Image (cartoon, rainbow, N blue to C red):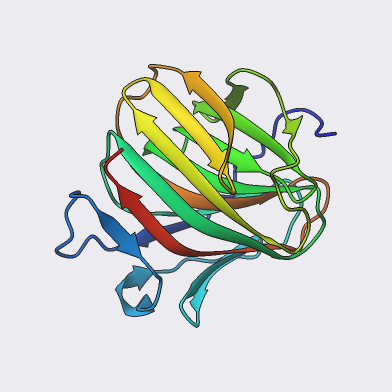
Amino acid sequence: MKTGLLIGLGVFLILFLCACGKGDSLPWEEDFSDPSDWTLESDAAAQVTVRDGVLHISIVSSNQLAWAVAGKDLRDFHLTVEATQIAGPNDNEYGVLLRMQDRRNFYAFSISGDGYFLVSRFVDGVRQPIGADWSPSDAILQGANTNILEVIAQGNRFTFIVNGQQLAQVEDDRFSHGDIGLYAGSFYEGRVEVAFDNLRVTAP
């Protein structure tokens, strides 16, 4: 069972994707095959890299988050991405960030290696669950597996899907538009590594 909210937000790793010529039009696809367009940043707590056409986020320390953001400004969309746990304890979190205003204000759709999910809102760096707290789902493949995550944003309504099964639908009007991101995080133990590939964003 997940315990409490992850509020250790002091050490963030940001990976900004260049929007070179892409603008914010949809559909938009990213297969991470050309890392030359990316700006990568790492430190002692986490590393964000692109290797062999795959985005890897590795969390070295406990109670940390690291992410990649796309440099977009999107309102309504349907996002699909493959997320694979590569290493580390199953007591972790990874997923999609959406309608990001900055590094402290955004929505998050999170799953964990031990089969839980959470929809939350970060306001001034503080996580606030929207609806239920961390909840189990048989739709989530646990451990070192690939899960297909989907997010549909339409106005103030958000639908969250894993491996074709809808896990939650919520309404919230705090953020009406913003960036999207992919992230991973640790709780009590570090050494978490998650890979992301085949990101596709279309109109809802």
